[in-house]
Length: 302
Length: 294
Image 1: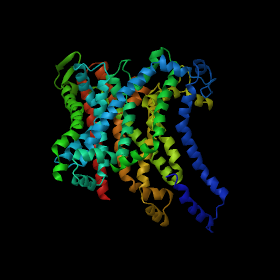
Image 2: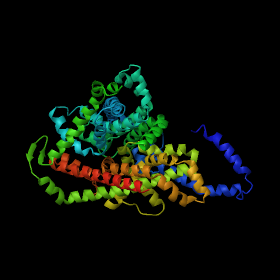
Image 3: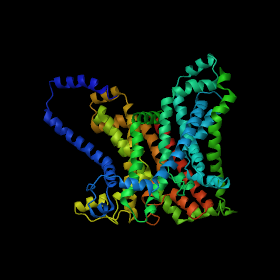
Image 4: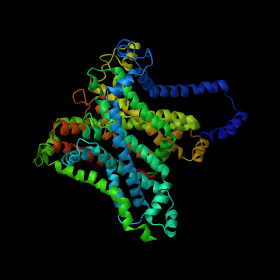
């Protein structure tokens, strides 16, 4: 998009410049734009300054926090707070737990969800609309509705005390949206493609693996990212099934973070928030283009 | 052809796992949870039959009334805020920034992907008064205003939560609505401009009606998310001061896990689920009617 923009703009601007009845001078035009620029500047300050404040805070010592004004710069940029948070604050354990809960559930969500979306949209059978509707209701039901029975079930089967309850619950709660979004994406693939592969003698499973899945690869990628953020940022399920410091995910760990130190240790806390915030931000920035496109396309078509 | 596309064995292989996990971990627990509403006790101490006690309690409990009223107030205020801010930003992206909106869009989207717990802790520190002033109180002091104990009263806590959640989510709704706005055909806007519609009139008469579908799906999305609010409030105020900022979700969580009453907890969860269901169906219905009228 950005590469096309300049080409399109040049002739337009050239046309405007040649227009004879143009009364406003350039300076006046610039003044007219001032409110817009101020508005954008204000917007950026509101969005970005808290994050900047967070970064600066993560380098300050406890003394600087208590004695200096809040907008002062830290005396030196060293990573003591980060080391403290990572080791004494157990952040390393929390991050490992989060990864061990998130990645397996993400893989299961994608494999199950894409296959189900394919079965619901491409395959022809009675009752598929009903099944899709059943999946849809799952998007609306709040997590609180399933917490207690699951807690009893995990308790009785002895899964409590491991990360399995998290993996199982995340997989199930991630499925409705994934199935729904994948069904929507498969709707956009022309049916002729699968009819042709069937005529060529491919079984439906073969069609799914060699044609269906590769054709919606970008959509799969988008859905995976959305689900990653949902699971990674979840608090309710993690708080219910892994509320013990060995199993804490990063969000639960962060919530109880001040407890680790007794009194509030601002530096390590800011460093821990910072790691959490900029870790996710880095993933987002790295994959920005795709997630934006995917989010927009998926939500509007749905 | 039909036999291949409707192959039963393949259907079981493809749909089976998802349906099985979904049924076992979501559908069965939903039914099971409804069963809990007739009992009291919990998984560790055991259950005793309680008849309809939980429902009687649900209708007379003043805590439920507070939580319900907070949830509804929160959902209404945040939904309006999110959609208004998102729509304003989307309009700005489309009509003012035009092709150069990409970088701004990305920056404003930043807070959306950040973990709620981290954002809530950040806001907690920004609005802090003790042991030392946070960013906001320092700014107030700078212009000669006394420090405010933001988390000391229920109304100021409420507005801090509102502020945070709108800050956190406006970028998301902006992108969502932006996608709807760019789909409006350019020649339609052009002909309206030739007919003399500019600024506010152009938006009111042309842009707003045309973006109604995406606006409505945003509202459904927003209200469904806000009725289920949990993590931002747990991390920011933890329901306080007192229980004045406790939504139904948090009250259910406390009842079940702090007081070990699964039966009553399930009743509250059921109330919440019905609330989500009714509101969604209501908006969906009214949107359908409007669309056919046009």
